[in-house]
Length: 66
Image (cartoon, rainbow, N blue to C red; front, side, top):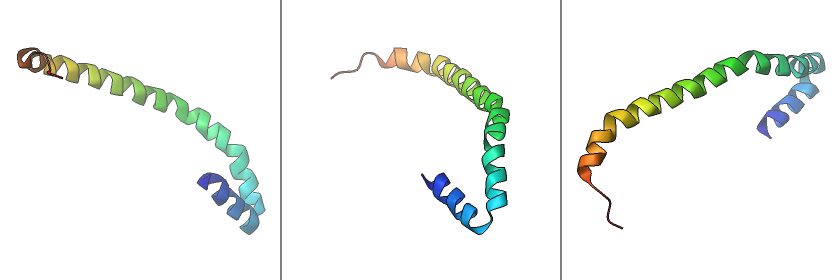
């Protein structure tokens, strides 16, 4: 919602720049998509490494009591 309000303000102040931003936004989103996917993959790998490192401590702690 905030992005739309900012774009609308830009449309009022400088409509050619707002139209350029409207056209370029999907292109920039597509260019940044691989980096977003890479970030998700790296986060998953780091969580896996963290789980493997903390596994002995969780096993030694024993079952949790409810």
